[in-house]
Amino acid sequence: MEALRTNRFRRKPTNTHRSNHLLSISLMALFFLLLFFFSNNYSITSLFFFPNSLKTSQCLNPKTLQTLNGENFLWYAPHSGFSNQLSEFRNAVLMAAILNRTLIVPPVLDHHAVVLGSCPKFRVSDPRELRFAVWNHAIELIRGRRYVSMADVIDLSALVSHSAVRVIDFRNFVPLFCDIDVNNFCVNNSEMDDSLLKKLRQCGSRLSGYNTDINDCVYAVEEDCRTTVWTFQKDGENGALDSFQPDEQLKKKKNISFVRRRKDVYDTLGPHSRADVATVLSFGSLFTSPYKGSESYIDIHEAPRDQKIQSLIKEIEFLPFVREISDAGKEYALRTIKSPFLCAQLRLLDGQFKNHWRGTFQALKQKVDSLRQKESLPLHIFVMTDLPMGNWSGTYLGDLANEPDSIKLFLLSEEDKLIRKTAKKVVDASHGWKFGASYNDGIKEDCQRHQRLPDILLHVEESVCSCASLGFVGTAGSTIADSIEMMRKKEICSH
Ligand SMILES: *[C@@H]1O[C@H](CO)[C@@H](O)[C@H](O)[C@H]1NC(C)=O
Ligand SMILES: *[C@@H]1O[C@H](CO)[C@@H](O)[C@H](O)[C@H]1NC(C)=O
Ligand SMILES: *[C@@H]1O[C@H](CO)[C@@H](O)[C@H](O)[C@H]1NC(C)=O
Ligand SMILES: *[C@@H]1O[C@H](CO)[C@@H](O)[C@H](O)[C@H]1NC(C)=O
Image 1: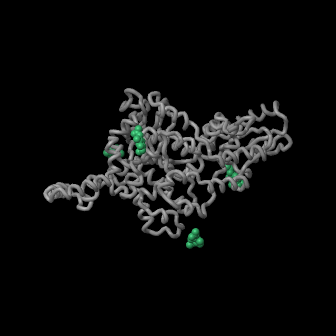
Image 2: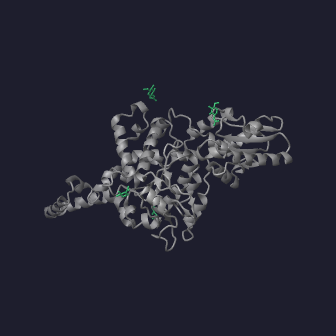
Image 3: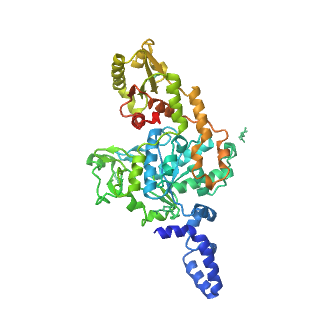
């Protein structure tokens, strides 16, 4: 299979040579050849220039094929908020390494621009729909000059020096895959004409798996959390039933018939599989979380028989922010707060958190009360919360704000100079562009021009909290809290 794959991309030169050779042998041979191919409905041009590779030539143009030189790709559809997207990105890195594919790095999607649904309730969007939603959103971000790559925010430099991981930025991938002149790609929004948009739409539907006739091009993974839990190198588990299945009540009520199986991702989608010949492998969501003693979608926590993957699993446990962001957090701690401080992350408005104010404030009060005994006053507290200050009165936050002698509160907002300065730095650095830039010349500046400043407040706030030497109080169940705990565990602030 490996040989086949390599061949496919080298086919053009060898086969041109071969067909010339054939032509020169005899007319007879040509006659039989033509007869054979016509009977198989192949067109004459594809016969002469790309025998056997008609399908591939529809996927990528021959020049692109040569440029890519045998590279295969992995795409997926992230969703929901940033923390979620980051956890899916980490899973994508892992999948790309296991399947030896170059990961297409997606943009940071707007908060909840794409939603998955609920795995435990077996009510999730179809992988194709998800992929197409992500595609449309990504194009919208590009057109609106709001595109921020995951790699602009998350530092991938250490990861890609790890030999198991190759990445390409989505913006460097699209012109190749869609056969669009890079000079037309990041033109002024108003100048993106209908034909370009139409081409992009077609291309997006291809990447999402709507055109299943072009088999070698995209393999669209249909398995999702309703039917599949991906595993890796777990003996005897491939094909086994997962321990979590929809219960009878749910089956009846929702009229569903899902059966969840554990499948080895390498056996199912790796070499020797049908998926392996595809230039792009497209997953749907790569979201997973522990559920009732199982995992909702990906159960790969170790790979004792594959040292490379094993060490990668350790490495992606935590992926740091780019230096521009982590430095901003340190700067704020050092220059603005100046003293040892406590970080309080209070998520109060979004979804499930609306109903847990009491518990969230109680945890903070407990911590503050204990610090009052030990530390010199005023106590410095950095607060990151989605509750606007105008709504603080009557809450514990309001109480704290009314004690200026013993409590000093610090908050950051979008308008802060530090945040704007950092956002500008992130745009100027545009780390994501590096990945796959060698395939496209001159695209970066066009795309960067008039770029709107990205929303990085949350990331800087997390970085500040990683520096809080008096401790951290987070909101139970918040992925942001988990992310901060991880940063603190890895002692990011002292790096
Ligand atoms: C992984 O893919 C790269 C690039 O396509 C190729 O050079 C390499 O041989 C592959 N490695 C394995 C173990 O198949
Ligand atoms: C983009 O288009 C708008 C409106 O047509 C125009 O005002 C602006 O100068 C253009 N920007 C560039 C970079 O061409
Ligand atoms: C349940 O689903 C099956 C196919 O999935 C369908 O044929 C059947 O009509 C459905 N029953 C009800 C009550 O909706
Ligand atoms: C916050 O305050 C605004 C304006 O006073 C009010 O309309 C809104 O309902 C408040 N929100 C909450 C969650 O209390």
